[in-house]
Image 1 (cartoon, rainbow, N blue to C red):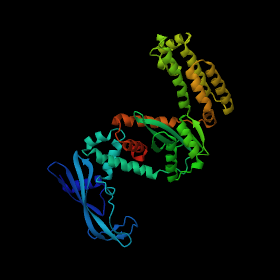
Image 2 (cartoon, rainbow, N blue to C red):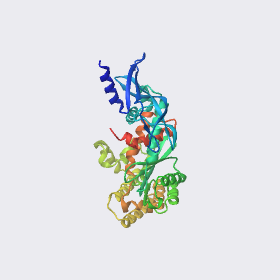
Image 3 (tube, rainbow, N blue to C red):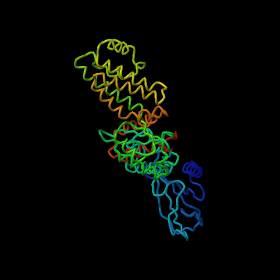
Image 4 (cartoon, one colour):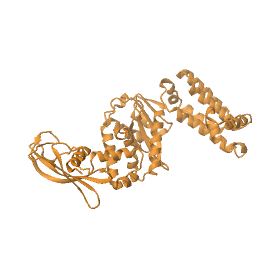
Length: 403
């Protein structure tokens, strides 16, 4: 082999350019590859703060894990200069192949970030031969960079939704409805969660009075918090969450009636799915049950009528009339479950009707929720909430959008 050519190739692979020189390469007893980098004698380097060229004061030995070269673990070693700046004193300079105090090269970190889109950190640690803790520090640093650089000055429409980490441990995810980016992740789903977000929003140049619309579910905590923190915005109760409340009422009726009507066993999804999405056998079963005098059948008709209001291109005024008629029908239905949901819808009607003004929904959050479920699945849950949040931020950063 031509050693000179090897050095040229490895220099290109590691991004080592003048005034830095790859002086030599060695392979140790473990077959790990070591690259030794030096700088040209007499070279001056720029102060990290003022960018003034300064003389070298002394050097400190540093080592970074690099991408494997031909399946060999690879390390870069360098005596990094400390410069003496008239204004900022003596300090270690930045090197082009790594960020300060990381122990990994930029290319190695980018490789880890790319793998993090599809793999758990534990799986990556086995693949690259580094500890989980070291890799988590990379993840947290990139997530922190995403959070620190996020900017909210142009945000006017916000969507928020809850999702569980495990069991009854919830997080609230805030999204910019115009760009679909994750803005903030808060623990819990209370009114104080909204105030916490507001402070973060302002810290990143967000203007609360410029927020015109917020979409959310009918959680009272969210409503209370939004009204207090974003006084000039309209609250739109998300269409899919409102319909979900009606579907839950329908399923409660079915569950109660199934003891008297065995035909209703294992029919949950027949009643809840849209008819066009049912298999032919399921449509036949639905047709058969619809002809029976079932309470579930009455509940199903109420559900269809409710969905139909959303499906039509109604104005706010017409939609209001339709919802009020539906509420009266639900109250007269003699179905306690629908009396209860009708009361909820009546109390939230203003926020429900706001949908018919701008047609805003939390649909963009479905993609985010799908991503969150994927993170949970491949990691089999996270023992630390901060790790879970960091992975969500990371999946929204540019480091995990590429590829």
